[in-house]
Picture 1 (cartoon, rainbow, N blue to C red):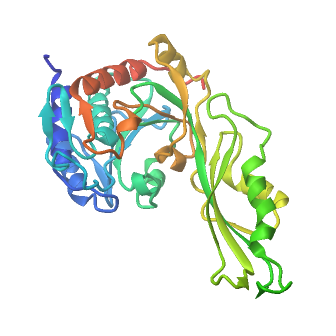
Picture 2: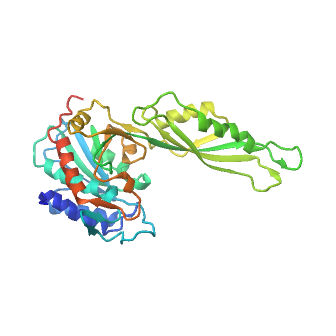
Picture 3: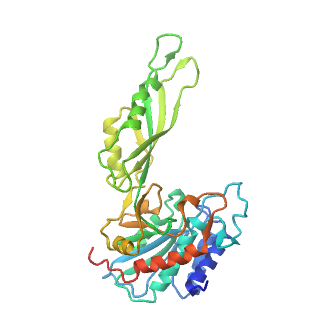
Length: 356
């Protein structure tokens, strides 16, 4: 397989990435690698913390801007790996190593496409960014540099989607709840059992359906994932605490949904954060229409990404398979990178987003 020089660079850069530990919050060394690589190719990256970005040549405020973003950090490997997770191991067409699939292949592919697009005249600006803390939705990641990037009209978020178009992504909100009773001796008719008081509340979260359902994401999904009450067998518990995982479709902002829940549920509720909102791109957007011409499919993603931190139109698409993310012996096929770069380029080259 004869590779374009930028594609060969991408594969080599991915191997170098794998060899560097880059857990969330510890991305300095891999950010150094990218900074040195960009400078070696005559580009002028900017940097903030462990985040880097570079703008296209002839950048103009009169043009719309597309952001090409993916992340540098990885989760920690489990002890069940049979390969060394920090040694890029090639077998057949595949490269095994931590972060190879999520999301090393995406970040090096987007960089290769940035370099190709930078050689041509486009009717939009574009920015490549490689950012930190995606795996923990950290404030030191992409959210910390959005103010430095300026107006963004469209974001391409590189994550393993088998190069299909995730046109919507569920948001995430975690709610901590507390229902109160009154303590008493379990042997006598004393107290108000907080567990019993909480049962209809928990059942509401199990059964209630919000009215707006998404074509791609379905309904809002609420799941009680933890409960805590009682310390002694002979004491009626006076407090029942619980937590709820809420996956939000594009029809609701997290804060709005929380207010609706508060109106319907007795007890004390507190959302841990409102920041991980649902994301979507209109199906009539020029990028989606271009993707359909390329025979790419559309779907809704149940998992969160840096899209949740981006307050502008985004789409999630990248080489690799989400089913391999955070798994033992994670890998990416070299052919997946080749095809990913080709599809990215055909999606973006000559794209007209002025009419949006």
